[in-house]
Image (cartoon, rainbow, N blue to C red; front, side, top):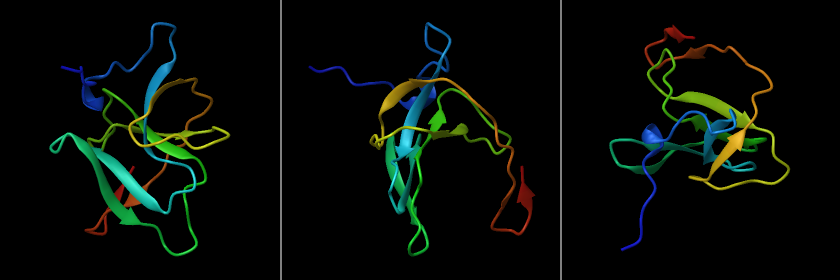
Length: 110
């Protein structure tokens, strides 16, 4: 029987050479937002971006991490061509963006 990969929440954060593992959730150029659902054990469609908008780069997450919102830390990957949802790769961190997002109840989350 073929082996299956562990869910992203069980992947190590760092590779053997010190790079971070990144799991691609939404590929570059996609107008659709996807995210891994631990409850489903699969990638789940979240929403369609407003008309004319798309992800400028691959968007993903660093496995086995948790931000203040309880979700894994987000990553914007600077690649020449898009990957695909579920693709795991090693990346080198080049910067950090601290952002706030408005929640459905009107509060702001950092």
